[in-house]
Length: 336
Image 1 (cartoon, rainbow, N blue to C red):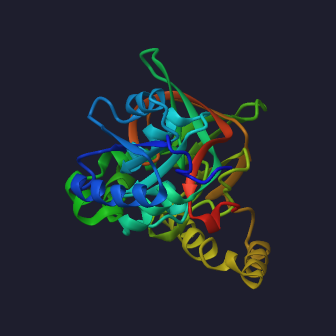
Image 2: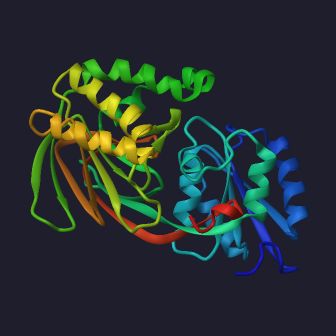
Image 3: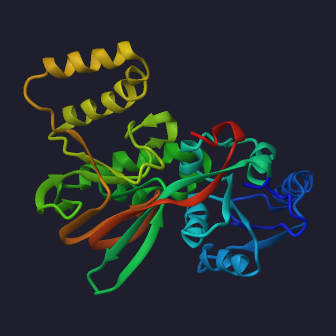
C-alpha cells in the first residue's frame, strides 16, 4: 500500500459540521497536517440539517478524493462512513461532540486536534466492519442506514430521545445519565421477535436489545467486551432486568467484570468461579453473536443508531459489511 499523500495528485476532503467544530481551528490544523503529509489539495464540504454528510462525501468521491475526513460528532462520522461503505477511499476522524463512539473504540485522540489530524492524513489504513440496518416503519416506509458502533431498541433509544441538548452541550455524555433516570420510570419492557442468521424466530420481553459492531461506551464502559471491529459478526446484548436489583447486577457486570476482571487471567478465573456459584442462570444481561439479525415489535418503538435517535420502527434487518470500511488509525495500530 502506498504511503498517504505519496502521489503528487493526491486529494483529500474534509466533511465538517459547523455546529460541532471550531472551523477556523480545524482548517489551520488540517492545513498543517496535510502539507506535512504531502497532500496536494484538500476540499471542504459543510454539512447542514438536511444534508448530514452522505451527499457531500459522494460529491468528494466524484472529484477523485482518496481520503475523506469527518470533523464533527458521531452523526457526521456515521454519515460519511455510510457513503464510503465499500469504496477504496479512507475515512479519517477528527472527533468532536459528546460520544465520539468509533473514535473511542479505535483509541483515537479525543481532545488533541493536531494529533487527530496527523493520524487522519499520515496514519495507516485499517479495514473494519460496518453495520447495516434496514428499517421498516408503520407508514410503510423502508430505509437503510449504516452504523459503526451499536444500534438499539428499547430504553437506550428512549434515553436518546429524552437527552436534554443543553445538558449534552455542557456536560457531554453525563447528560445520558440524566436522561436514563428520567426514561426508566416511563419505559416498560418491549416484546420482540428475533432471529439470528435466518434461524427460527424467538420472542422475548426486553428492556433493551443492542446490536453492536464494537462495545466500548463513554466513561470507559465495556458494555460488550468481546465485540471485534473486523470479525464479520454482530454482537447482541439483551438486557432483561426484572427489578432495580437487576439493573445493579448489569451495572456491576459492565463496570467491574467487563472493565476490570476480564483484563487478567486471574480476573477471568474469578468470573468463571462466580458464575458457577450463582443460583440458576442469570438472564439480566445475555450476549449473542451472529452475522445477521432480524428484529420485530408489535407496535412502533423508538430506535437509535450510534447514539442518534432515528424515529419509531416496526422491524429491523441487520447485516454486516465485512471489512467494508477503511479507517485511518495510528500506524502502530494498523494490524490490530
